[in-house]
Image 1: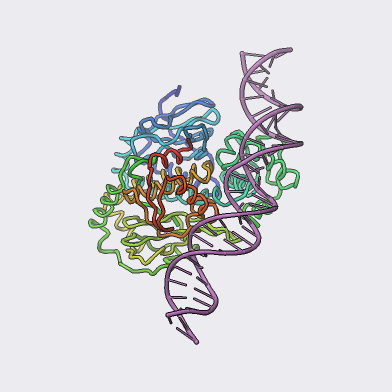
Image 2: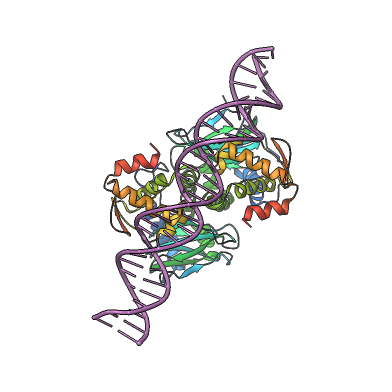
Length: 232
Length: 232
DNA sequence: CGCATAGTTGAACTCTCTCAACAGCCGTGG
DNA sequence: CCACGGCTGTTGAGAGAGTTCAACTATGCG
């Protein structure tokens, strides 16, 4: 289960170049203003769930260290990975009373839990937090739209290339460490494990990426990858 | 640019329990409180654009009558329909300075334009508006997640069935009038025109829907359609 | 060690796309 | 009034990208 300890102020790693990271930095400012007192730290071990689809949605979360995955299931077992969350990312917002997705730790992780009621009070007392939330949600929606374009109109190679670029941009480097399995990537991109594996092998044999082992990828020729991702 | 659908699905979609009418009503209340003064009505004719990808994002919009479509284009012409907007729906929110999608009228329409600066001021002076925005954005994100599951994991029939149910739920009836073309539907669901056409014909021949003409659809056997949509 | 899990590769299949033709509707203009 | 072209929707036949099924390797953990 989730182990909760007293909250300590989390100073985070340096922010990357993407909007997401910038907002995450803003998040910390907002947090120091109004959220710090209501957050509770917890550690989660690899594979452990934070909540399930259908659970009451009574907390909001932030990733401090590690990585988290949110998923949705269809009745016959088909799975879709809604998002991968990394340090600085907030998640678990909901307009409804219940969870519409499951959240699990991709690897051992540290998170902060904010009780929903207290979070909503903080929203009332701190206008800056409200502005931050609006910006973050708008950004999330924009990313979601980009992802829908990817899911609906891109080919397998384009999807993989876009995914690797996105992961690299989050990290702000030309190397990526993938804490998730091929199955997670497949369910994130709307492909099968086999296609993900084959496509990565293909990109490696073309010299576009290097892949010393399945979890470590270097964007050897970033420009080429970008060209592929855009569909040219 | 971010566009938001103000409504959550009312009936059967797993997205959320909030009824569309309710949020739409809230929207109007919020508007009367702070937005009424800054909004300007405008009429748009079928096919006319409200803004293009890349334009400065200096307005927020609400549909009063008619219907609007937002789209994204890839460099080689592949298109994705981000959303269809109907009366009561707000759209055109953005965290960035520029539009990330194009908005066009699906049919002759009436819309209200709110200058962005004034809108943001209204946000500061009216806390209720901020809460409304947060709820709406959360709902939009939830719908987006549902849509990604559809795009990534559902088959053609499941996509069409889900789409028809969603349109019916928005209207709160068992009949649907489709103001968009088959091409729009295809680009919305990540299919081709031909597949959309064939699949609808198939559903009609199975007696699940009735289709007196291409634009009018009646859910003859809603339960069957729901079963198909869920993938059983 | 031995078993389970993750990743890769091969071969056959299939759902959807692509290409192509045709039908229906509508507004325009002769 | 009808002919015409343009656009939308439907249907057919063939092709292909990605899936499915299956085998095999590598890695990690008891």
